[in-house]
Every structure is written in structure tokens, then in C-alpha cells.
Image 1 (cartoon, one colour):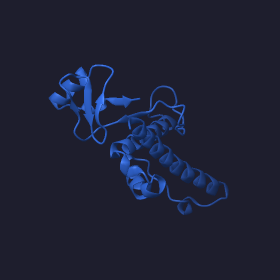
Image 2: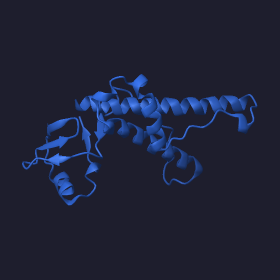
Image 3: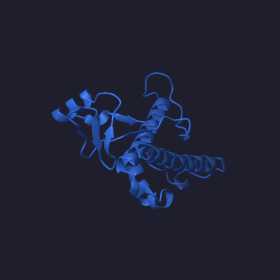
Image 4: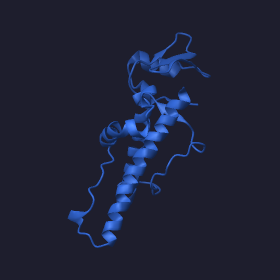
Length: 166
């Protein structure tokens, strides 16, 4: 079930990236034909709220199984894409220090590490600190201690920084 959530994040990421790339390519093609800037295809916002809104309107067609996964899974993929596109844009304009960031690439099923991030909902750590309870997934046994996560949950700080890997 965790892999299904990680796959959902990958699907949302790839769908949104293909959508953004298609509009960018269309605008570039229109420019080569001499279309004035005010008549180009409208741009697509790649902020997280805009990507989430677009995903929510298209998710029934793109992923008919979307109700089986937590909304956090799809949000994980869209957030990763929004960050990647912002890093790429900032790198091109000089607002980002360090090595130039490349344009985000599609996530392949076999080549990427499956991961999903839970940022909202009831996250509980069992007293033995070997189990965690996540929304839609239920109780999961961990291979390592969740001591740091338990401290964050008890303190009410940002416990959502933990990423669940396969």
C-alpha cells in the first residue's frame, strides 16, 4: 500500500510536468512562427496551489483509482515538481546560487526511489516507537526507531518532514 501511494505521487508529478512542458513547447513553437506575445497560448502557473487545482479537475480522467490513495500522495508529487520548476527558473535568472539546476525530468517507475510525504492528518507513533499510524495506510511497522518523529509529534512541531521510503 505504501508503494501505491509513492506511485500516485509519481503519476501526479509526471502528469503535471507533461502539462507544463506541453504549454512551454507550444509557446516556443508559436514564437518561431512569429506570433505576437499577446496572442501566444496562455502560460500555465506552476505554483503548488495552481498545480493542485489543475490536478483536482483532471484526476478522475488521469487516475481513476485516485480515491484509493491519500491526498498527501498526490500533493507530494506536485510539491516536488513545483520546487523543481522554481529551482530551474531561479537558476536561469541568477536568483539561485550554486550549480545550474536543470529542467525537471519525468520520474520513471524503476529508476526513482519511491517516496511519499505525509504533512497533514493524524500521525501517531506507538509507545514502542517501532510503529507509526498514518492516514489511509494505518499502522506500519518501522525498521528503525521513530524516536525523533515521536518527539516532534509530542512537541507539536513540524513532524511532516519525515519521508516514508519503501
